[in-house]
Length: 548
Image (cartoon, rainbow, N blue to C red):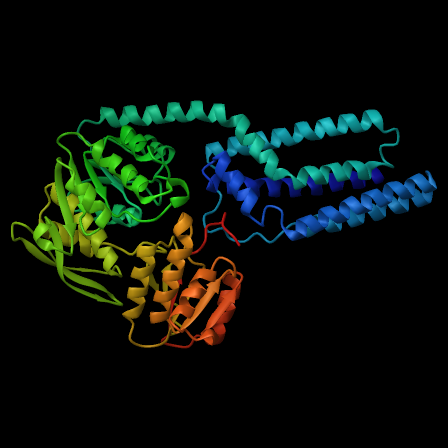
């Protein structure tokens, strides 16, 4: 009977360890399978070893020591032996199950790619090997394996506790295999692109707005061409390689590649893969400063796209961005400058802009005097810049203004990027939860200010990945919030301190500020204060690998 119970508890342990290893697989995937970033997350996160887990580990250690002392004192008396073993099993099960937290819906769920499956399998094998070693040592040195089984359960609990480390070890061990596979996969995609002589590749990069610009550009170009663009935020070498290998065909005339970067050289690697003929830089600002360190490195990295264009390529610049202007001015390849300021210097620009809570209307003009009045459902002035980028690409591809206008009319809001949701309660929700940055956050507040009726409520955890400028940017964000919003709900007490300080700087009413721990608490607070005609802005939602 005891052996049957042990077998059942072993299944409980296996279930828990599989769930915990899956969690760390998700986190290491979010960190791009990079050992350094994953270790940094382990060091900073309070979820890898939360209080509930530490408490359970402490109690299981305590009851195991107590059990061994009791056995040493009373010997192997039959009935009492069974009682204390069963008591131990019950307590162990209780504390182990208490560590299993509710599975929250992930903002960016774990994707079981082939790489993730290989890493998961490697971690499973490492766990089995460690377990076999433990069991072998245990059975060879313990005469009464049943009586002292709690020792085995304690060791299994320790293995469960340190799944973060076995995942780290697994990632190191499979890296040579992954590097070989990635190189082959990258080369396959590079050869495929190289063989498609009639294909036009458009590369889009920038600190902000590149994903929106990609979809906008694709929609406009589809008025005349057969277009493939990378889905969602596929902007890494392996992401682009996957799209090229799996989805790009001879039927496509244009391939639009979003290009992301966290380090110098990242954009150059992507250009070596895709060989773009048109390059677009949408914006440059303080993002990923934790890896780039300064704006000069960001500028240098983004400009890699322009440097790698062929001699007959076309460079497209947002000339209103002060950092991009410097790059454009030193470029001697064919270029198209777009924007809304100092129009005499621009090739394509927007004038007579009318922005409202329903969208935007504006006139696109060029140096030759051509113009067209356009309307879009997209919110915010920053989206007009994204549209101008798409229009510039279309012009470079030989499209006329009438075709461009038709494309602009068909552009749909991108989920979680300043799109309006009307749940039918009379309360309007503006969802800008994808990823906040200083320019985007200011644009979101500008959109919020366009609403004339109702009170304005913002829900935000602030901005991240801004390095040393994070506190300063969030403090300025707080100042801007104070000028627009009637109520402020801050998600996370520690991280939002600079926002709170910015609010106090403009004399904001403390009674209208609410600090909560998570979005569930924020929702409860909204239910208490919101009423019909109010407008609620959800500005940023921290990635799953960020917390307090």
